[in-house]
Length: 445
Image (cartoon, rainbow, N blue to C red; front, side):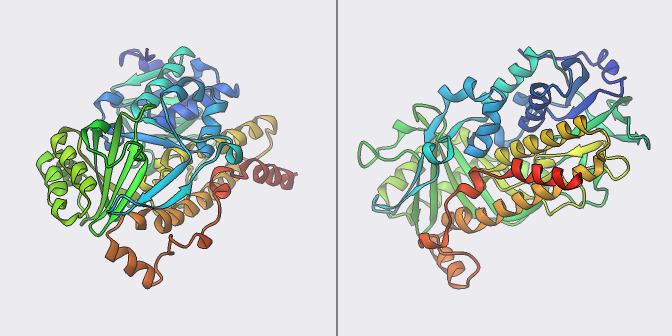
């Protein structure tokens, strides 16, 4: 069960300078909490997590679907003891299969290999991962204050030993505050007052979940994790459980930008989402694709809309005044979900920040803001590389055929059918983070 604190009692949350406040009880906030505990950087009683809504009450499309955990993220979850609790509920995969409208396999790509990278890809419902991590945080006795609205930073001590912040109209304090409050982060407004917020990439995903047996597949061993490419675009199929009994169906489409409220309203319009699929049916020659569309239209209650956002590189991921306010995960660098790296890059944030906090603990003379500047530059370079990879490798393969060919012809993207244009995945799945940090530490003297 979740540890929680009544609102009337939570005002006692952070009165000592050694306490830490975490804003956001999502995957990033829970991951950094578990990492701080695992490495004995904080006692459970000195950590307080704040969130306005419980996960079940959060109107976030991410909570309606699954999450892909790749070897770089799995390595962090394994070290924290999370992987052992969820692995039996995950769909495991090593390959991604591409098919044409005749159900012929046109390409089979090795995406992960246990022998090379240490892990296969794992996919499970996001809510299961979230519930597991909440349970682990609760077991350690960390307090979570639900129904708590973060209203801003009031003051940050020049001495660097206290952050005064406001929640639900009252002031509280901590020695450090971490903003893990997602793409529409409130903490980010303090760290980067001029930040315009997330920017729309021009692409949205229209997604649904259907039972595997709701479609008449052309043959018995049809791959459950595959991409069906045709003139209208591509269907991306991904299983959400160990058995592959439920699959996610996704299509990408170019749409005009909207306000946050307009996106949310459109996402609630199930008839619009049903019509999006239904209106493409006659454009497909594939009987399999038509069968998938029919199944989606029969399960319209599972459809949802996900506009792909990203963050322009921010000037700071930490406060200028004393460095005691830090943002991470989607609050610092939102990635399009098509990259499959949103959670995994947040886990890399967690690992690298924890390493540097351990360094600061062992070397008290090391300057906090200098260490955080290094952490930010290290992580921003990774995020930029992932975004460029997703743009060339992932998003383009899900566009309509004519648009894919045009972009390649104009030299705006790389031709993914030419395998020589792509390196193996060691750069992504086996980051050299620890060695880079060690080298930086040695340079500091």
